[in-house]
Amino acid sequence: MSMCLQAINLNTFTHQSRTRIPVHNRTLVNVNSHLRISPIWNIRKGIITACSAPSQEILQQKLSDENETSSSDAESSDSVENEQQVVVEFSANESIWNQTVEIIKFSGPAVGLWLSGPLMSLIDTAVVGQGSSIELAALGPGTVFCDNTSYIFMFLSIATSNLVATSLARQDKDQVQHQISILIFLGLVFGVLMFFCTRLFGIRALTSFTGAKNIEIINSANTYIQIRGLAWPALLVGWVAQSASLGMKDSWGPLKALAVATVINGVGDLVLCRVFSYGIAGAAWATMVSQVVAAYMMIEALNNKGYKGFAISIPSTDELLQIFTIAGPVFLTMMSKVAFYSLLVYFATSMGTQTIAAHQVMVQLFMICAVWGEPLSQTAQSFMPELLYGVNRNLSKARMLLKSLVIVGASSGTILASVAASIPWLFPKVFSSDPQVIREMQKILLPYFIALFVTPSILSLEGTLLAGRDLKFISLSMSSIFVLSSILLMLLSSKGLGLSGCWFALVVFQWARFFMALRRLTLSNGILYSEEATQNELQKLKAV
Image (cartoon, rainbow, N blue to C red; front, top):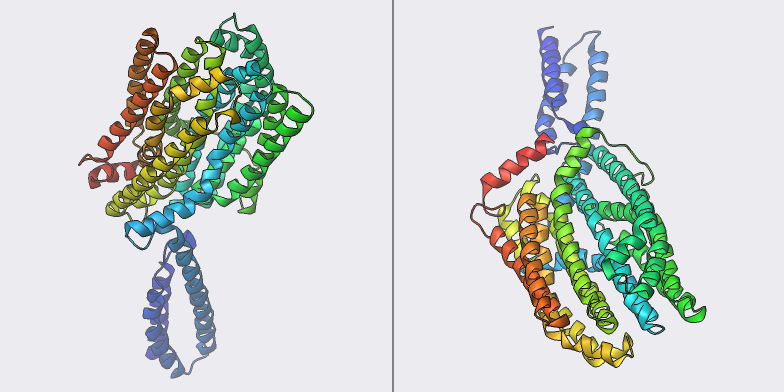
């Protein structure tokens, strides 16, 4: 009888020990813990077999049930452990070469995501420019209003990527779904507001931007922005869905959507502008339709991952505060960049129609090349949080990842700047047959090259700062650089340096961003070197 009681006590002890393993809370479980229990099972079976009591069958049935439970727990543990091992580390090998390969695998498809928007505008520029120099000039303020203004809402995109990547690192899928639903709701609200702002204040904004004397440019630009304004809600919702996929480290799903959208835009431009001679209006319709299609496909990509892309949730006050804690500094940063690029167009507008047209071509080329660096920023935002705040934190590996990003950025910057500068020099008639426009384009090739060369490296550094949530520094430094560069731009323009003065101001703007971000990341008490700084930010994340 005493042996039976010992068996019962031993059974109770092992059962209590096993219930402490939090498998159902999705915590990593070491399967070896089950292996350590195995000898106890064997001893217990021997003891119980020696018992001759009516409770023997009950005990054996209980042990059998518990054994099955333990086996299922072990299998669940294996699956959870395998799932987490996929996302814990950026790369198991710490060599720069292997990290560079990993960067290319992720950022390669992601290049297409940022190429899509500028490529659509470049297609519009090339097609419209073959028909009318006035409509080509009108694309300048038109694209500033549509494209540059949309970049103001990049804070939604960055906040989505940051929040999703952080929640996935904490393995909270329900929280990921909730955050996506909230951000899609915000994207829809901001999109509807921008639609009405375009309808009500579009022509007034264009007039103040270009001057009342350029009435032909204003009318053409207004036609362009009113048509493209129909896509504002779809555009911002699509950005949120795209960033959610990138936060999940998936760059292929969004790429497929934007590849289809780019084809639709290109075919639409050729048919509507060249065949039916709709000019700038045809280009606007083609771009608008392609953006709506892209947004739908982005949401479908989320649905295919098991999330509800069409679900929306109204955020609470605390949730809005959490989002805008991240989005506020990012918004200020994006506003500074957009404002400076808009100032470039503003000063170029006062230099004549041919100068505006030349600046429009060069700006579109610059944008389409500059976005090749955006995947490096996204790589940092997707993978750095795990190295800085994840389960297996490793600041040394984070520094090595940044080094790999800068190396890739410098290499791609050299190639991009060389190729992009050669196009207006060797093939200028692709964009315009006007000799004056071609002459103005070729005047600014040197500052164009210098500004573009450093852009990918800038984006890799700023992406790391965003991943480390060093948002206060980013916003303050960008605001300061904007103010100083704007003053320089006004001084150079007042000296009569023309379009070259505008582009040399852009050179100063870009290189100031590079040196400020590099200095911040190499400080001994920065997020990549100081355990204390990283731990403080980690405590903030846990509090959220």
